Image 1 (cartoon, one colour):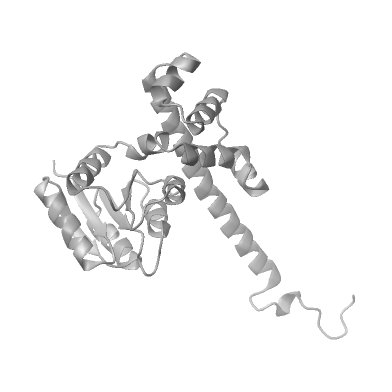
Image 2 (spheres, helix red, strand yellow):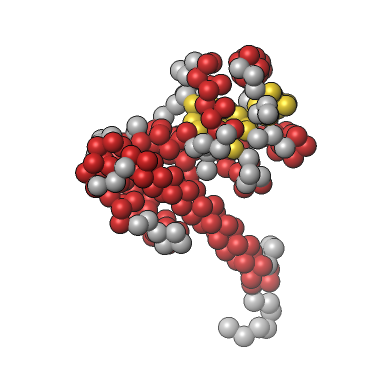
Length: 239
């Protein structure tokens, strides 16, 4: 069965290049869009299995569109295609629940191979995190609440096990997954499975925190009135 792909990328030459690359690899590009809003509409119409999302969209730069696509269509697999790759953006893609992250240096054949893996349900981004100690350290800090009390409260919704924390600690120190498995007495496959659990918890917690903040803002708006007049004492009211 052909894997249907939607390409959401601002630049026409990159859209055309990605479409051609995927087509040559036997992947079917069901449609394309140049903006995030157009991408959401096309995703709703076409229901593709994978969406390639650029990071320079005019109405949702960075990983904003990837995060919103995952929120609207949880069954979709998203691949972030970066204009200029960085560890910070890889971490943001992980938090957005992306299945893979591709930097600008990735060759066309590798792009197609990654999309095919993602279309089969794989999370390529797990291996990408294992190969980036600084990103693993950021993930560990997020769960430990080092980036603030709000993050700590979010992480409490789906806490890491002691083994997951140990894996993150060792990976952030530059240890490869095989060596991590040997050190803690588990197989490489178990390390990979635990990494999948870690990143799933991170993405879920991040979406949950966003929902909680949105509800909180909504509640404050209702309590305070739409223009603030409801919260302001009128003439003759008691203080």
